[in-house]
Length: 73
Image (cartoon, rainbow, N blue to C red; front, side):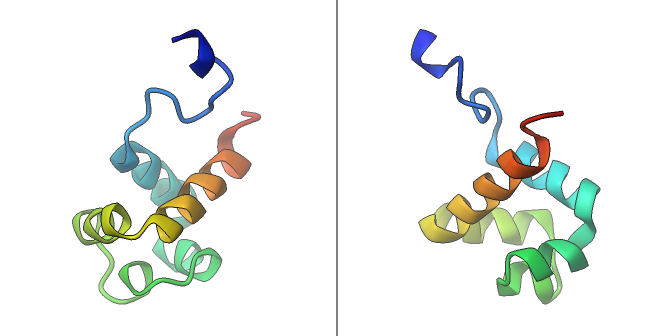
């Protein structure tokens, strides 16, 4: 556990991260910041989660945006 104390994602699920980003930015802005179809075409939490779980590069972009957005708040 101690190795995780500096990890801002520790204890956060991908769903929670995505919901917070959507609440903060909205789908339009999120789709602009991370250009993937699941954010731009008929976006939903469920379809986006399925895509992000299968696509490591997109998940990394979401996690990086989350850290940049909320790490210092």
